Image 1 (cartoon, helix red, strand yellow):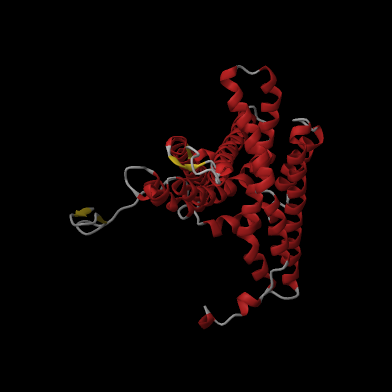
Image 2 (cartoon, helix red, strand yellow):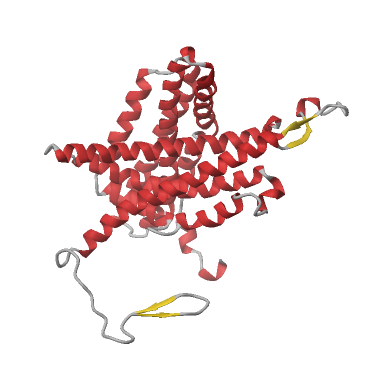
Length: 351
């Protein structure tokens, strides 16, 4: 092996001596090992992406609490009105709460997936069957990686936006976060690959068992009505989004079955796989945020003054996400059902 010194580091094998390799594990076992590595890598990449959004949001929040600009919008007619911090402005609040909801919801997604992995370890250590937990973990990993990295990159742009033009300066870390986080949507399988894996391997090959199990957990949670009247509208949004998600999957399965008559119907499935992944992520994150909000609602009446803002924020984030993000699953269903083959039949020269 030789190292070549230049502007870029280049590693070569076999330039001085014959390259030699060592077999790791058994013969013909490489592909299984590779997928095992990818499984761990997807969890780590998703966690890293979501963590980057979390710190991006916290930086944006700190800046917004200090940045004074313009009067309160309610005093727009008063030329003598005092200037306020930008946390008083409606659109800044909308942006900050969007960042908060996604950051905290996807953090819950990581912890939820990790808890399933812990359950697998415990069951296998006790000699028990963990096949159902393995299937659920496999279902969640493309969401952690694909959905987590896409949404983190998307929302980091909102973090930068909070800083205005200052966000482009190296005085603040957001511009580097955005540059560094784009890779999370690419390596260990691009988002497009995550979407295809999610549908074909984690739903179709599993015959929908893991997805149905997750859907049942959501329905059971909704049936409990935890969180009281305050969270009732959010529960309704989640219930509707869960039904819409099932409709997307059902439509894609119909298109998949239709390939027996016309193989080109597989293109319709391919045009919807990423859309399905994103919609699934929204539903799971909405579910986990609402579960956290239900706990917060129970704790809030007896919370110390120090913890009241924390619990109030959990409830606010869940309600905001349910009202502002989950209705998008209905739109995703409508678009998915309207997908035709026109795009695939378009001449390449037209692009």
